[in-house]
Amino acid sequence: MNDFPEAVGVRMALGIALFLALLLVPFCFFLNEQSKALRAVQQVNRAMEPSGVWWQLIPLFGLYWQFIVVKNLADSLRNEFESRNKESQLGIWEEGITDEVNIHPTYTTGRWYCITLTISCIPFVGFLTGFFALVLWITYWGQVVKYRKLLEA
Image (tube, rainbow, N blue to C red; front, side):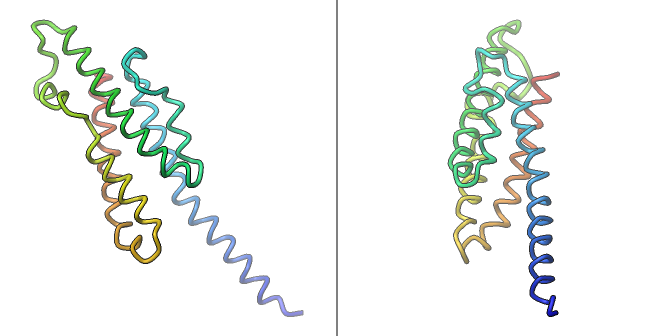
């Protein structure tokens, strides 16, 4: 007769499902962008296969794997830019990009995104770093798009 506890349980389940969907959908778009950036790199310059980014969807393991993806994506971009710079006339490929090739493109922002996201899993402390993780995630995502478009141009 008393349906109150059952109704609360259903509402909680729907709330959790909605919350996960709101997180999961943008995250899948982000992973797709990482994969597209790796596909824009010639196979000989890739530090990992584009399909490897999807391992980040595995709970807990994804926290570790994101560090690997960020490093390998930065290495792949650097390798590709260095390769293209060597193949261009007079060693000049793109204005301003040659300075960025000497470092890992996207690596610093990506690494800090991974660190803050991992820390945000810690109760109480995570609330403080979660906002920074979100800002760094959006910034990192924008950098990945920028370099992918640069490679495709």
